Length: 120
Image 1 (cartoon, rainbow, N blue to C red):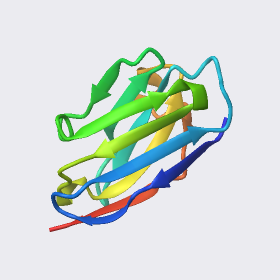
Image 2: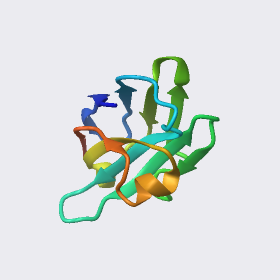
Image 3: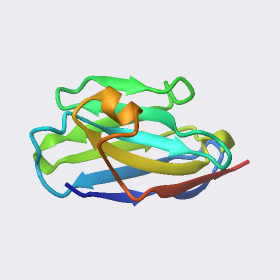
């Protein structure tokens, strides 16, 4: 399975962006899809994940501002990012894994990353 990311870019604080991540094929073992991000000099952190059944998980810093969704028919996950803040700046990586814990430990399949820059 390969992941193709799109979206991202630069926006001013308070603005919105949308990320998409499409898997190249359906895979029974992919239960969890989602996003992690990494800012310069910081560790990778959870943004949001969603299971095939629709169970969502959000990082504390984005809860209430970001919305994750998934279209299983086209193996695609979306991240709607609202009320963006400068601290949201970083490289956003899509992940597809058999479970949340697999993604959390760095396992699964990862996308190439896309830059999100939020200016104040």
